[in-house]
Length: 77
Image (cartoon, rainbow, N blue to C red; front, top):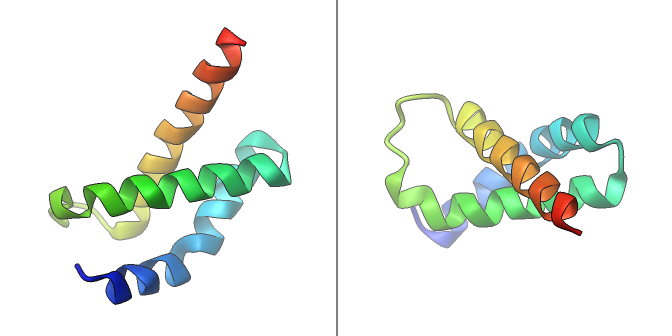
């Protein structure tokens, strides 16, 4: 996937991912951070995405893992 195609993916799904994150963390800034983390991880992993599930499910799964990582970091602090 080229950068232009990935930008389209971000454009199409960023609102969904932000909404999911916002509902989970109840904080606008943290939801934005988690959304960015989600798309950064997706960008790095796009070559491994095999299309076995819809893109929105894949991205929500990445967001869920980003949230778990977020709580692990804050638990240590």
